Length: 207
Image 1: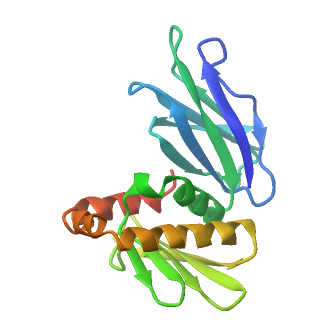
Image 2: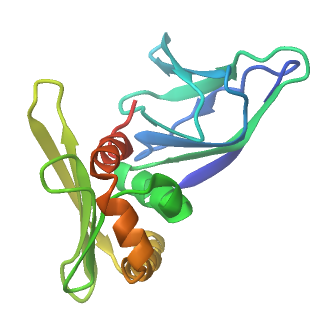
């Protein structure tokens, strides 16, 4: 997974065009500095044709750029305003695990710890991310998303445990296990079921 700094201001409102490499089908933007009135424009390009999506700034933003060859980012900054953060580019599993590893407590998802070194973010009945220890060498990462017509779709991928993403999964598992041992954490989740379900749907979705 590739990472680049993001720094925009009133004198430099747009990034240079960033060429996408093979396997970089998704981007993850983590903003460290922005204001409530800020929007970010994501302009993707393929064969000279450009498409722009405008999204209200939040701390975490993810985009599906599958099939595009490049993209650039811009903001609606005035006076001395700034927008700063980090851009990550990679596959869906790399992006979601990177997001989760950095922001586990920010998401406040519903965590379900299973046997055999496994965990699940979200409930079976709605969108969720499941990581199962498939064998001694691999994790199986399963992402379920909700479709506009009321249906659902799933993707899965096998991840070597000794890879960078496999090491991240191990850290996430340990943190979730600690969270579930905290009675206050578990009690808080039980009182926020509807909110947590919506957050999980958002977590599994890309713009």
